[in-house]
Image 1 (cartoon, one colour):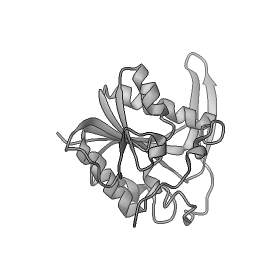
Image 2: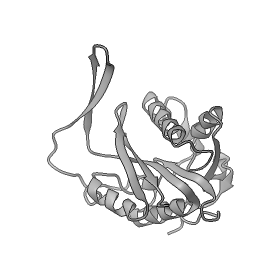
Image 3: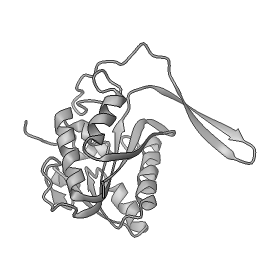
Image 4: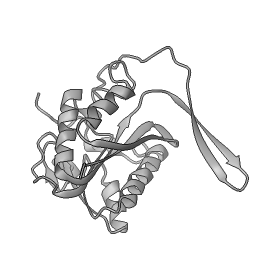
Length: 209
């Protein structure tokens, strides 16, 4: 399979691709890298470059990599063959990007991300299991967000839509399987879904010392 870009630069238009829900996910991206106290980060698939731009405000140096030169990444290359030495970056991130590869290639790309990372790998993936978000106001504690699973008859099959080859909790890609496969490459520290955007599930991995 020859890897190639799936969407034109215009896909990332404000208000279309970049809606309020995705803004919330960017907040969580920045939150994770600041918590980990990272200095030098590689981002795979930068899109509009928001993560890099916001991270710079907090003195986190981010370099970007993509197949598409129109997005003006710092490095033009494939995620399955990163042109960097082992442990070249404190962490490697990829947000809503690995599902754009067939599952076996996404694991190969994740292996490359782990190889290049010295400490951590932080990713997010689409989770197709429907959830209902609710916000509760609790006196003296403020607003608490909760996610309630939507009743379901089981996992649906996934059909390639021109962009996503697979999604978590589609048939054959159940969360338990995805965690097991990715954890066999790098140790999983935590995974969670974003209350403001339940479609995005975050994973934080740490390399064994």
